[in-house]
Image (tube, rainbow, N blue to C red; front, top):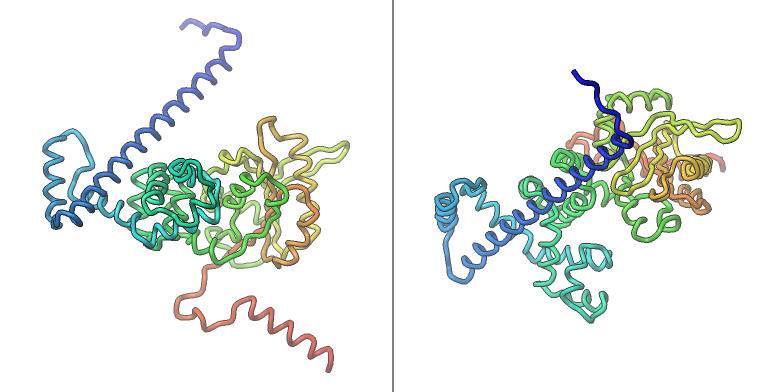
Length: 392
């Protein structure tokens, strides 16, 4: 066997070529998916419109499926069930309820890619004027543009499992933006990511510490509460033990964090002069293009935690951040937090920091829901009792 030739700079050249091939394959896959989803949308739209205008009955779906299979025997995806899904796909994303939800979303977040199609169709008018009276046809085009960014297999799962228009829109946007795989999407639905995002306030200083568009992306990446039930822990523990458990279940932890997180290291060393400091868990987010540092706390949030994280982020930006990376982000993961206290603690911090709680145990069984007081209700009672005791 001949020894391999030594060619200067070959390794770096090979890496560049491999990266380019992977990028081309990804782009080609996205283009194919876009055309496929667009085709299914158009077929579904045609069926719905013909049934409404020409009075076609439900039997047309079965006949169309059979004729398409006969005409294109080498193509998959034209079973009667698949054609029914195409009809459902268009119909459910064109209902007044879904379009109304889309209009509300556009009004809340003008300037995002979801709005670009709508703006182009109303050339010469401001975004505000467009959204005062959204045109159904243009809203439908904006929804279609969002839908074609999501793989068909994901749409099938959403059609089966998510009926609420607001929840459907939430998962569509998140999948399009963060590139969730089907497994990640299913995990997020199972974990009730939308319900949690809606019910629980996120606490951070991203709006003041980051450019507007990046702040919105970082806010979507952060959760107000992380579900760590998969650790199987129901007792108090030390921070190092929590860290070790998370590393032992790293795959489940990354699924809970959301798609795009890449693990860099635990107890990540940062040196400054003669001293060294350690970040509990360090990740890199592929889509935000930023380092994300986690500080684990097994106690309630304290204001000094924010100062420590701010210091770590200064070091990360100075010593670890690549030239084309965005500013590093810090997440303090603690047992509980007071939103007002967090807000005041983060006011003076120049680096982007979020504070989130973690949940170790399952929620109450259905039969106990509403019958026991919440943590907030208990805290309110304690606050009322303590002054009375002091008086007596």
